[in-house]
Length: 325
Image (cartoon, rainbow, N blue to C red; front, side, top):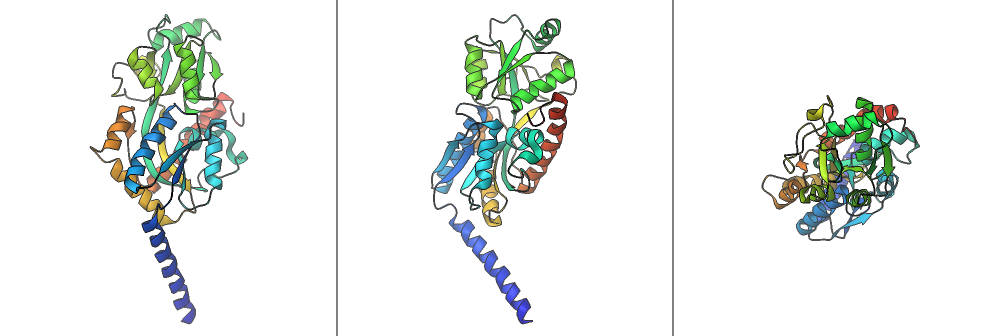
């Protein structure tokens, strides 16, 4: 009886301690790691979310860029940080979908077991773009030219294995075309070289620079990768509409942290973010202006989504010959 009462007391004490941590959280600056250079969709989203959380929490939420390895560096930093909720990562289809599919057990962390998934933000398509002077006015025309001239066209992306790159690998797999990948160290650099005419085409998350470039006419959007058109660019058709059957690649963004972060803190992040993402809020409006389809979820639902994404991209990566590359 004494042992049972002692064990109960320990459980109650731990629960009380966790609740106290959540009530005090955050009482110092919070880092949001970003695995890409400034200017791309992941970075833009992180800065919008960080500004909103700073206002709600009354303490600074700072974006820290750690670019490289398809987002892996920022993810690794987060995995190794103290599990106190003060280091988050803007996780996405690249960091927690494609990268685990490519490298698997070679990673220094478990992308599922070592992480908690407190806040799903939403989904965003990629967009395939060409310079306005390009003769191809549609994705159909681009595919036809590429089929007739294998290896003569090129496309830029934010890097090998990132979601934009993989979306075109999937396109090549389905259509049988061969276009040359030109990897950059970030989405902004690929976009700039397409605008200047240094490369013929590029692909990137619609959020951020690509949306502005297409709207302004500096680039022509050939197609969005999602199953439905983006409300922000309703005149740009989907890949499916242009003869690529069953094609659907939708990127996604969320806030992730270490699995050992106390549960009450995970619950607080989820509750605060879901309030910020509710209908009619300033944050939701700003994200939707970036072409993000806002879709808040529970930590359990977000974790299930991540597992499904890893399974999906494992097959695509294998077909493209990018396992461990």
